Length: 505
Image (cartoon, rainbow, N blue to C red; front, side, top):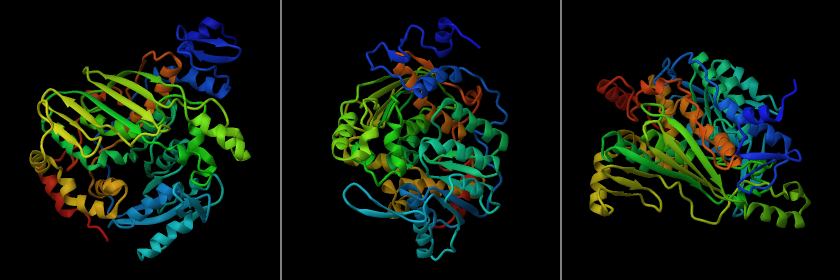
């Protein structure tokens, strides 16, 4: 079917924001011409997909599901994140690691700094043997072998640690085969994938959790509990970020399979990794549970480092010639979000500038303020930060029970200071005790959809774009999930805390 230019601009949402020239799109903010047809196609679909409405089949917010006495876990992707997850899960009672899936039986990688690591199925089996656990069934080789793991009757939870483009297909297939899905971040890359996760989870009544470990960092949990108890008064705004110089990692030939992480930064411009900073502040602002995102606007700087790095490497190594382009994501992206209740969120993304790591994590309310970076976290009630003695009292008063219960053990087990283990422990504890998950499929979809929406806004001279409501209006009625309990009340707290599984260390 033919379509005229005016109609095309209306459909794509590019009218007034950019022009089509010689088969490529250029935004009016001076960004270079984009001629890649796949990129153009993806950009043209984002706004249309974001404006679609989908009727809710079942409200997964607050849904607990039947208790699982034992949680049988199958891992897909036994790389850097996968091996660490197997190690953590091996220390939790009530878990059986029944399946391991990877493209390789064994592979050796050399990380930045010269440390060699062994990945692959053999590495996972070695971890199980070290903990005197039975070997897991192996799924190896073909690109679709992971489907066999999802179909296995001996798996309850599929734990996904693969490149980003596989997260949604694997999570959807796992749920369609009666499994809960837990996916590394981001859970999805496109608006369509976000809706796929939501619709599949609602239809199958299977959990789909994005493994956002930063929601379980200790200062983030402290400020969440403080917000829930009114310390900050009415929250006005929150600032968050993922500022992490990954330049050397992304250009490391041995670290990421098929250089997938570097490729994610080519031909895309926006906030490509928002959820580490965004997840915790969304919980503090009760997003999807009393408030919702209305719209966002996003702006990116030019790229001043990655293209230069690629050109330098290509001179010495032909391997990098395909990466010697000028189409890398801008160094700094700033995305501003406004909520229905008039709150605002700033999300920054920079993975290619030489600056200290930061997620910012700033929470500002009518009665108080907190900010984590630079560490250690600081809290204020008026115009000055609290002193050390006052901070100690705050921590004693507001540290959540889950941290008092598992925090010290989590620090010993490790994983980004313990938050990775606390995340895994909480997930298993919820599944075993019939507790709603802290992060449900609506969170996974919403926090991930910032990626394509920010790309659209950047390409459209930072024009605003509406954020889909994945709860289909239920955000008005959904209530926050208490980090210490289900919605069952004080009896449930005591039962959870007293009967929670012990750790094997």
